[in-house]
Image 1 (cartoon, one colour):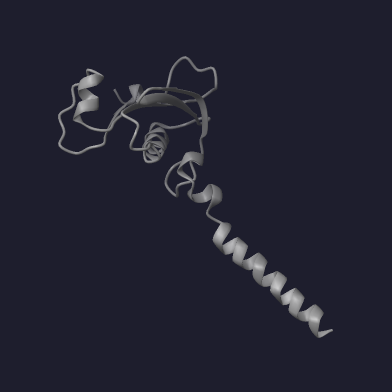
Image 2 (cartoon, helix red, strand yellow):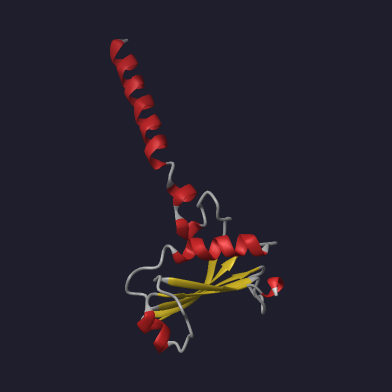
Length: 134
């Protein structure tokens, strides 16, 4: 009887520990859009090239504010070897227009290579364009 009780206690402790330590999965994984302030999004249409790439983030019925948060959230996941990256928020997988687009640049050299006219002293730099705000 005592062994069953200790075994059960150990099993319950293991489940609780796993729940406490493993609860970060989707909630805190920026690539999954799980940040507390960013909306959930699905990464689609990923393209990469030497030093950069682009991606679409699918968010049904996204507002401009949600799109901006999602773009900022995804930009935080970019690695040091990425030079420039375009991030778009779309409403449907086959969308021809976007809610917002962001152009992430690692440094001034990356801005020169992409012919972007950027005036900032803070790098990396994220420029956003949301047509509905214009």
